[in-house]
Image (cartoon, rainbow, N blue to C red; front, side, top):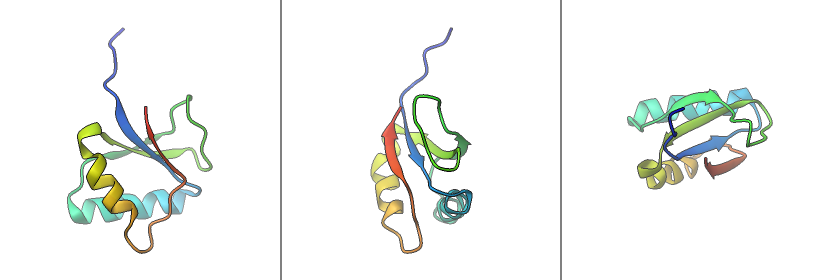
Length: 76
């Protein structure tokens, strides 16, 4: 089995919050994609945003944008 590289995983309370974050990231050209929440993490809506660890600063900046609501940021 292949070892997975660690990544940033952002969880959301609602699917609408996850979709809004995806839209904001696409507009800014920020790395990442929507994924099912990993089993090791619990979350409200079951959808999370995953990005490479190198994108952590960009993710933290995106989370400060008006209208962006998230649950938690993890390294998984």
